[in-house]
Image 1 (cartoon, rainbow, N blue to C red):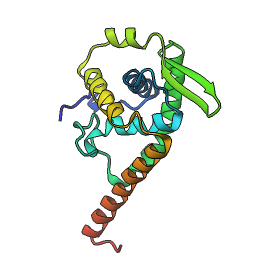
Image 2 (image 1 turned 45 degrees about the vertical axis):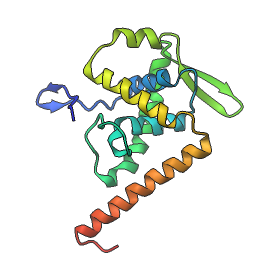
Image 3 (image 1 turned 120 degrees about the vertical axis):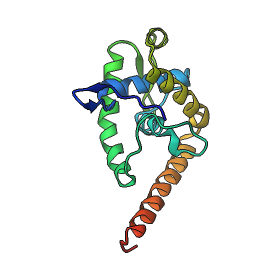
Image 4 (image 1 turned 90 degrees about the vertical axis):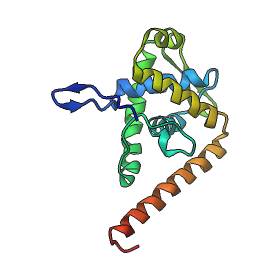
Length: 172
């Protein structure tokens, strides 16, 4: 797997601030255009986007794997990051928020395509490829289908975590 880290002061960049979450959201929304998604779907997509290697048939993950017992905490932190990232991207018309009967939904803004046409890096290219792959896989799922998919994904985490705990000698 290619590493996408910047080496400054001996520490790798985390790529997990509001700016990075916002750029990932724009990549997802660009890949899904003209579809729009609610916040919950974008949070889940953001997680799946950086961990595509955990999905059957998925490309290598963008970020290093997190310990299995950290995935739930990661999703809790991700909510605030994605929200702040969307707000940041909205200030530059990279994301549009639309109110409807079902609540707020987000779609790519007018400046999303021009933004991605001028931003070039290995990370952004990999991000766009994985966003396209993820949207092709899950973008057309209904909310019910998507929730079922995510339940299966969480069940897989739980099973892996239990196997890891048992192999360390912990009681089941």
